[in-house]
Length: 311
Image (cartoon, rainbow, N blue to C red; front, side, top):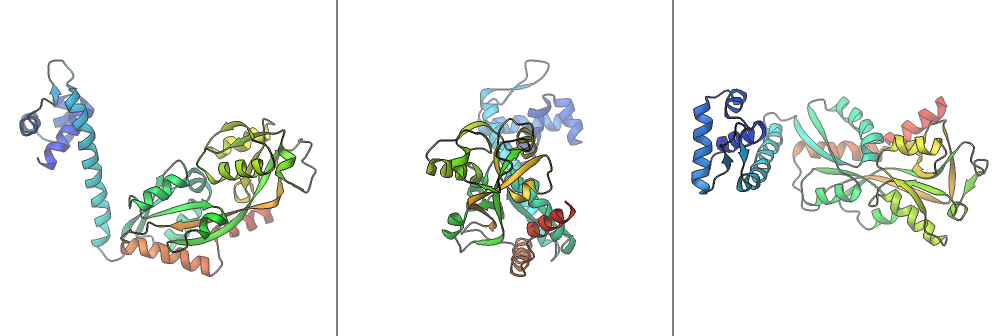
């Protein structure tokens, strides 16, 4: 089995036409036909149904297409990883991010790192929540994960994390809400509210449920979404309340944010799997963030201060 045969098969599966496949790959149509037949002969299976105008995959072909896709993706990933060895300074660093991190944390980190290391590519790999990011890092599918955690989470694992900064979470209310005039709130004050939350595996979702249950009730959740503009707009429209990090709501005049008592802390960290083999570019990224953390020049803290000054 040759890589070229897999490439031809995947392209044919997507285009469903031998002629267009040949044109796309800049080869002759007989070359494509020969490669597909050789693949079928080796597997002793019919992969492509040629009886119709548009070729279709057989059941065996559909299953093999999934395997072929994974192989092609692995090869492309290997090529990207090997770019760093073409010269001593370049490379690709794959960083896993959840929606909140992607929107509010990663852009600041990317800008600062790229300014100092323009030859290194930072690739954001999206996951639904921090648990997915952590699992991918443990399996070495990514170089690092940017996680948002609580103090108890970080205390349990200190060997393969770098703390990048801390923030607090606040209750977010419509400006006209009866509680908007208070200086601070506790979760007992929110027993009758409709909550707008992130999805289940996020720190925000977990901590809200935990604090509400400690206050003696289960939160009435109106909707769960990973879209923070949606959460803030729904709060502003009076549909419900939320609990969000201050760096997400800083400068937003549409909603009222009140401190929680006791406070809900949030820590954002760089995480890597315990068995990960770190390449030179990835190591530079970790050292860069670690130095910034040690110098107490956290990216989000600086951002929040500047935004508050503007407001």
